[in-house]
Length: 390
Image (cartoon, rainbow, N blue to C red; front, side, top):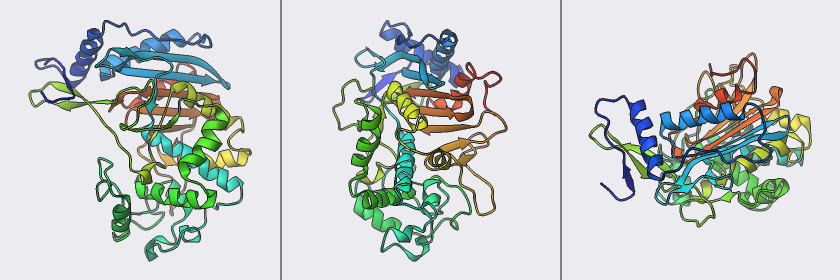
């Protein structure tokens, strides 16, 4: 066995789902800790017990070591839950204070930062990127800021599938290399998730704000809401109450092993990933956003959450379920219960149902837990008729 791996017992010819269930029960059993939620005094909603049972079942089925949940209804937090282990190595339980990585949910904060600049009259979403940045390749200059935010620019990607820069560890060399690559599609022709978009947005925001992007977010979002546990962290940082990150890997004999995962982010990618927080603080951030404390007009919030249209007038996103992309926010457009559903690292989910005045936050420490797949079901305990996604 390699260092950093925890063996999961083999399960004969069991199906993968059974393997994961066995793995989770085995690992949590090592710590002799029950899957009990740490519930705040505000968590008095009648659905709480049903939600907790559902989440415990999901943890067992998916092999999730640790999980936090927060539910906001009508502007108030009605459920806070903390389950399982933040550190398997040291048998540290998840609490309401445990800090989890958001990965790509960071882009939602970048969207808010962009709309703050729009409200200040400094940024035009439909202006070409060349209005704000000089020296770009000719094929890039007509791409609009809105197309960057919504991943319909057609740009080549500055990272590979493992989120490694094209020139590993070198921001400047990777930036130079990506500018030599051809467009992958005409601007506005199709949706393709792409981190070059957010590198460009970082350069624009830094220039217009007159300060580094991360400082802008800390001052105009974290500090305004009151988010003392929230910040830009990766595996190099010492962070109180941080939840370790894990993922399952194949062992070659049909069994699964949990590896610890060490994520380190290049500075240029911090508009796209890097924020760590708690479910409670993320929930309070969504409350502040909808109460006008971060954006000051209903028009700005509506623009933030309106999916960008392709050249043919359609919207596009990751799937038939998450079928659009707005200003940093993936959208689920449907006849009823429209939603903004942001996922990060296949380990975190943030779902806002604006028409139903509901928000659900699910944070885990397992890459591949995919809470986006069951966040709608959690919302269904509070929204009659909504339980399983399309």
